[in-house]
Length: 63
Image: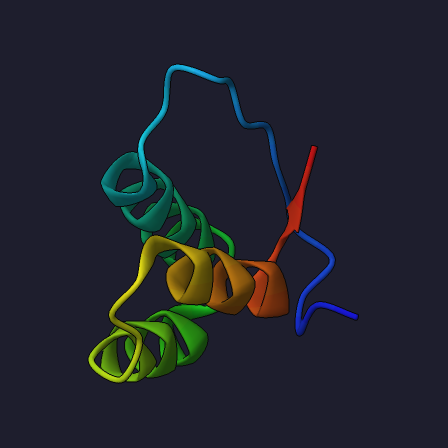
């Protein structure tokens, strides 16, 4: 279950870096600035795209 109730719509054309930027922006814009900082810090420990996607899913729901 994600840490927020935020939903992010993903298209097939987006790469992982676009998703990371969208998640960070969405967290900041919706009063979750502290989680945006934590998300950014946790990214340092995730190297593969699959790991990064799993981390993204810990913070938001992807449709």
